[in-house]
Image (cartoon, rainbow, N blue to C red):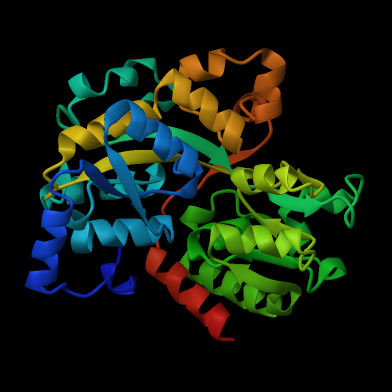
Length: 359
């Protein structure tokens, strides 16, 4: 059994009619395409257009919901997709089960030569079962509090903490993500848990009660990238738990947004690419993976999205000051860092989050 409780996931899609599927196959017979599930950071329209120009392959992104949802889709219907990207820390504990259930295809490193340029600290995220590699880390980042400095000044002591999103001073003007894994990690850190993923059932119950007591503080729970950006851009919220790409996007719109390094520990992550079994397009998918970890794309990803690359060559293309500006230095800052690991009792996290939303 995999550690992911697949009963917790929303069942995806309905069966297409045979005639419709056959017609669709004919329509795309002459076009090389890849159907992928991955976070929005690397699939901006200009990126996809550039890749299609150099490779002749059109990438068609499916909606990305969350890391937990992605792993559920892998076990339920992975063959519908040609490539997936999600949190390395959710792939790792489920890797052997996925290989055992034959829902993953191994990656041929000979077809992903840029894997040789991965920064040393990400080598362990190129995960193996036996001698075969099943994942490649493509980019990484961290999820801070984003706050509008027009309303919340950087000298405010709360800007040094995730607790800004829980404090009554900003009641009704903050938002968090509608995701049990990330949001409960954040709240657990605020409650003093150094390793949230290791919480006991009793501690999860206490966290759920605390979260429910703070529900009135949240203006909303965002689930989509555009939704989160709009909440901040419109002034509906003054602060939110967010992503580096959101910070970049808001700044481009002229919104004065800053981000923090919470004293409790900054939640950080690595996104890994893997190949669902059942796809006939593994070769093309590996061309896409190789592109994602190329020095050129890694540099572009950081400049366009504010998201750091796992490529050592991409990092080295920036000056030390640029590396600091883009956040490459956070892992060497000496400040607390906490990876978004899979919880030992994920089912209780999901149950607690459901109770919070229903309260």
